Length: 177
Image (cartoon, rainbow, N blue to C red):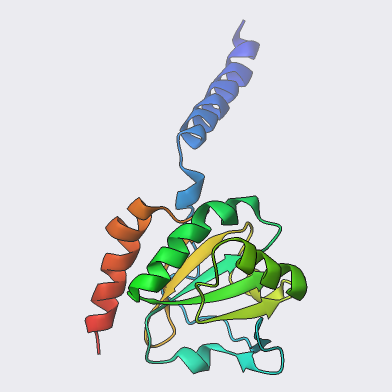
């Protein structure tokens, strides 16, 4: 009987870990990049392929980097919220069009209520997304005036996430010199 106690105890410990893990919210996975400088990139713009965008272009601004794609079903869910946020001019929104085709992305923006981005960078091969730790689309990063990542939101943005977390933090960051 004793020889079964150790395997049973190990099994119960594993069940405990599994039960604890199932109660976690996958949208609250901490990013190791919080508090670090934005990964360097210089990518072509979606709407003007002969021009580029980089984090250096955004120094001195608090901004959101929204990772999106025309093939992303969840991006449809958050897009009207981004369009509304853009109309309110409460924060600069930069898009990172992830592993997408330029024509499909431009058409998608036209078909889904317009372009809420000040500019969208084309990350055709996904390397910039990988440098940001993106493992699913959409994801949104809040970046301060010095180019430091301050918050990461996994999944589609919600009005609650914007009003309770992202925009209040953005307001605080705006007040910091």
